Amino acid sequence: MSICTKRGDEGMTDLMFGKRISKTDVRVDACGAVDELNAVLGIVRNSNVSDEMKEWVDGVQKRLVGLMGVIATHEDDHQKYADAGYSGIEKEDVAWLEELIKESETEKGITFKGWARPGEAGAMAGAYLDLARTVCRRAERSCWAVSDDALGTTRLFLNRLSDSLWLVARAREGV
Image (cartoon, rainbow, N blue to C red; front, side):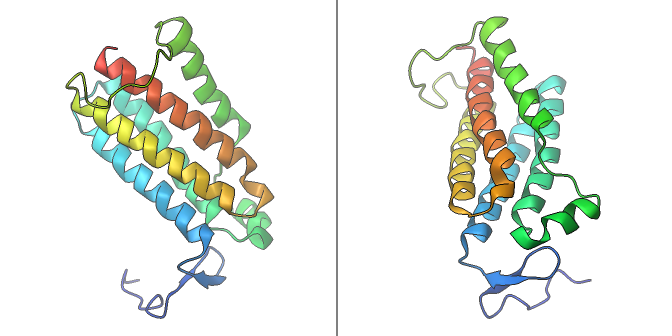
C-alpha cells in the first residue's frame, strides 16, 4: 500500500477501524503532538547518550506507539482495538515512570529547585529532553481536549512522562 492514498485531500483522515474525521479534530491534534514527541525522542536517542538512556527512550517510544493507537481509535471502537491485540497504556506503564521519578529524586538526589534554563549546561541531549518535555506537555493538554474516558491512563502516562523528562534532562546536564 502506498503512503500516498490521497484520502486526506479534502481535509478528512482515517481513524483506526475506518471512521473518518476532520484533520482539525482535537483527536488528530493529540495524535500529532504524540507523534512529534516520539520524533524528538528519536533525536535524544541519537544525541550521544548512554546505552541505558537509549534503552529507556526506546521503552518510552514503544509505549507512545500504543498510546497513539488508543488516541487514534474512536471511543466506539476501543473494544475492537483491544480485541485486535493492539497495545495501549496500562497502569503498569504509569508505575514504570513513577519508579523512575522516585529513583531520580531519592537515590540520585535530583529534585526541583526552580526552573532550569534548557541547554544551560551545554548538553545537547539535555536540551532535546527539555524540548521533548514541552512537546509532552502539549500532547497531554491535547489528550485532555479529547472527550473520551478511555484516555484516562494515557493522560496520566503523559503527565508522568513530562515529569520524568524534566528529571532525566537535569541528570543529563549534571544539575
